[in-house]
Length: 239
Image (cartoon, rainbow, N blue to C red; front, side, top):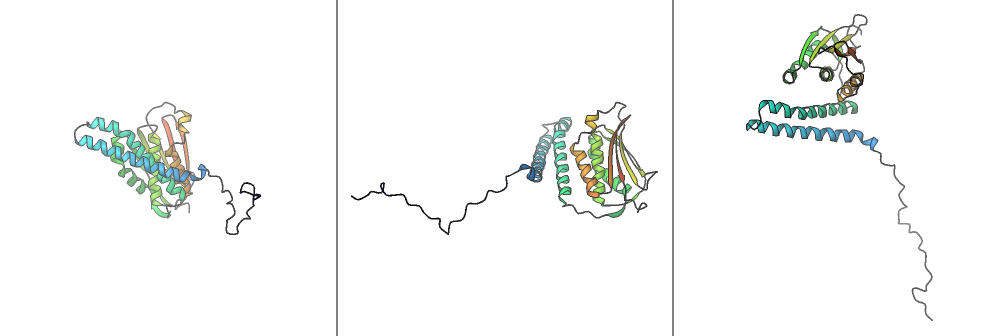
């Protein structure tokens, strides 16, 4: 009696030498390792979206579909989103080491004057008033970093008031330079939780100070609002 295929004993195949061994499982994927990529993507998309909104509003204004007052009201959130996106991109560039630092001997007062003048029209349109008292102080600092630090300090203080005072002087005790921004709006105490909230402006300031390595930041409440100070230790006099 002949056996059929179903009756035949099963045969075992020996593994072929040409077949690769099963791959070992790779490390588990973790979102924490991709935060820089995610942050960069979010900031880029936010900047693009804000730019499209602003272009659309400007087109409506040119066609007289919006008044100037309506334009300002509708553009404010888009401008805020655009500013946050730029600040996030700046933090990422500094944190990644892409921005090369060159410490040069500069007069910080001149750098601050240039930084304030460049955004004068923007701040005036927002209703911001800013008084300045700047003493000449020579530092060893990257000019672009000093320029960005001035903008970031004003942006941080502007969250607490529209009337600011900016002062640059030599520290009377140490051979350092001291840059302070104060609000002059009211005598009401600032809520401690709001003062210590690490908004993107404060994160940018911390990254700028860490990138330079010679800047110490402090924020505190005052009788008239808030005060933000930056202490520069690499003055020419100190060195």
